[in-house]
Amino acid sequence: MPIPADPTVVHPMPGQPRLVLLKPLITSPLIEAGEFSYYDDPDDPTAFETRNVLYHYGPEKLVIGKFCALGEGVRFIMNGANHRMDGPSTFPFPIMGGSWADHFGLITGLAGRGDTVVGHDVWFGYRSMVMPGVRIGHGAIIASGSVVVDDVPDYGIVGGNPARLIRRRYSDADIDRLLAVAWWDWPLQDITDHVRTIMSGSIDDLENAAPAPMRQHVGIESS
Image (cartoon, rainbow, N blue to C red; front, side):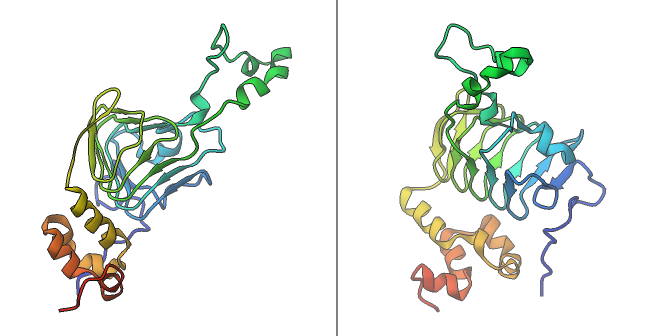
């Protein structure tokens, strides 16, 4: 029987300290990452929470799904980066202290866009950036150097600054099938048994490989 990979190790690749799994690394209650989502960086990937999640003063969360691939320099800008823009100055005077701190409510009351949520099986290219409150769908691809300011649909490919939808990887009907089969939610042994199908098979192959409970859930007849 094929042996599953271990989702609890920080460094899954022997001799490659530049790659880390995020779930066993993260300590902040405001950051969540699913199994096998990883970050790659030759400098200090273990500092992901402080170097790659910026201005995270709360309470908004960063939620990253399973099986996401984050290239070097990916950054998530959180709502704490926002400044007021409805007055003559955007400068955050209260953080300087003194009596200016009495006006802290003027910046803590800034409206945010809520949590930043990344779906499953998302690929982030080199030095891409995600702005506060963005939702990125399952199976999406974020091109290198992109600045994502708006939500990204499931299986969408986006690129540029600001990032625009280039195309979707599959038709609407096929995306519905992929979301229904949800391979990322299969038991780990089933994923392990069908890695080749998940990586390079057709959607028909994927549906046929789905474990019995999933097949019943999406209405696929057993052969």
